[in-house]
Length: 138
Image (cartoon, rainbow, N blue to C red; front, side):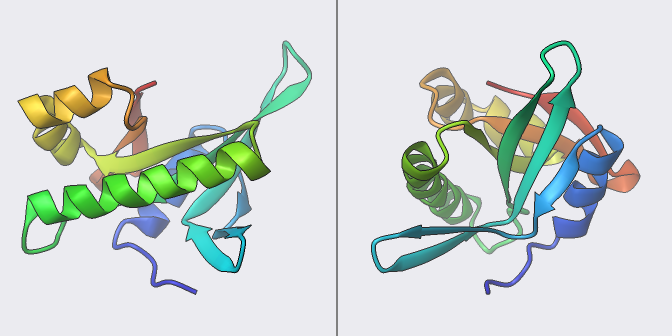
């Protein structure tokens, strides 16, 4: 099992406050002989449709020595998980969880905006101090 991200419990609590039920901690994926672990799996009952919306959330703190290195690792990991999920659980949406500071900094800069514009990543933005979800990007 991989180590939990610094913000793991914060994001988990924020999702629960936002009405999500945590179904996997972590969400285990397998493709061929490779095992992978997305930080969280969750679902939310959609009352109007009597169905559940399923998500997978990879949490990144961006606390490494290089923001660019952290971004490259996060996007690479996101792409791998995205493509495997598309095959094994196509009804589950993948999100990268980042703090409000990272969303308003890195993802508001030209490179981050380009990644969002080109649909390279979907974000769930959280505020760590209050353990709350503040924004979803699709």
